[in-house]
Image 1: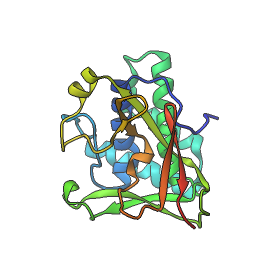
Image 2: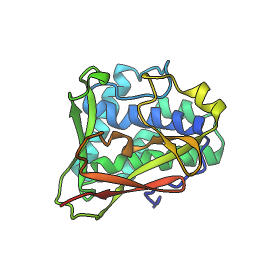
Image 3: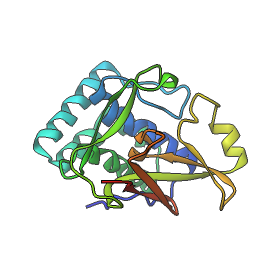
Image 4: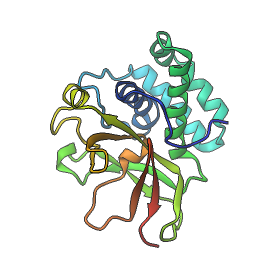
Amino acid sequence: MTPINGGHCMTPKELCENDDLATSIVVDPFLRFRTHKMNLHYRKPSRQDEKDFRIAIHDFIKDQDTAKVVKRLMSSDLVVRFLSKRTSKQRQNFHEHLMRFLQIFNKAAGFTIQSCNRYRAENRLGAMLIATKHWRKNEKIALLVGVIGELTAEEEAKILKKDVNDFSVMFSMRKQCAQLWLGPGAYINHDCRPNCKFVPNGPTAVIQACHS
């Protein structure tokens, strides 16, 4: 089984592309609206594809059959076309990223996702993660991962547009560079009294509960 963590060897561009597609086939069909995308011109799946993805995700929520849902999603025309020009390693990278998002609906994960109308910047239509079990202070939320992509100044200028797709960018004081923060962890909402925190660890980050 593919290990669920944020370790990866993706370039920032590849990470953005994989994240956009994974959210489009796992998160968006479930919530029934488009969540954040890095590509400013990202084309959403067709209505039929969205319907098929929604059915696949709801079936997974009920039967928890990971192998079945992965096969259904990976064999869809949209994903097959996306992967057709990728190398075997790049295809594996996407598979791993898809697995990270599927944990949102793993009953053992201790969290899930729902719509959020709190933030004006998202036109009151965004997504947030919620706990489905009691978490103790400093307990690691093992199946909730964030994926970090370090950006050069050139990549930052090319990929990011202020107040449009810079929703999940941090600045590393230690490395003195901007970092993308994607994967399911990107749905952690900003709050003055956060109930969880992330601890960077190379290309990934551990999510910990701040209080019980």
